[in-house]
Amino acid sequence: MCSTVSNVSLFVFGESIQLVKPPDEEWDAAFVLSLLSRFKQKHACTQDADALRHALALVQQQPGQKKIFMLTDGYGVGGLVPLAQQLKKAESAGIDVVGISVGVDESNVDQVFGKWCKAALPPAVPDALRELFSDE
Image (cartoon, rainbow, N blue to C red; front, side):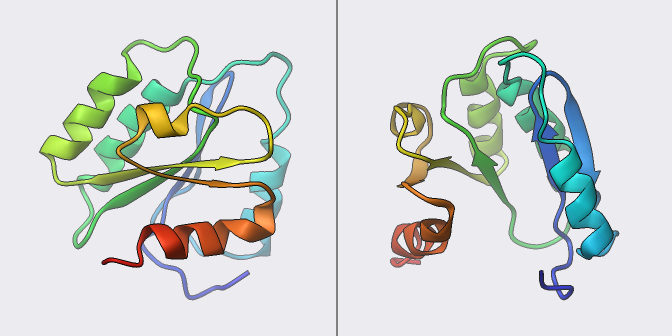
């Protein structure tokens, strides 16, 4: 992992929404361990709209260019507000939200997100992002 990553926050969303890395904490081994420990879920549930709402609130306070990357299948269930409503808020605030689908299972990211990419395997994610942002 690279310890030079700054102003990056990371939320995990599933049964609950957890801020794993605030922007002022280091991206180090302790962070990676904390992240991996939060991937276990008892029930299939993704509160993606609520997670995006929390991410927007945090990102809006940060200076500079703002992007939110969501690792998701695009099939949100539950939550207080619809994902489409949160995506519109992000767009109005000038914040890019990128949906990233990883795996060979069916995904809905291309129907939900304006910017999206798909990768069959985790090592293919950087290439998929590079292709997505090649025009910028």
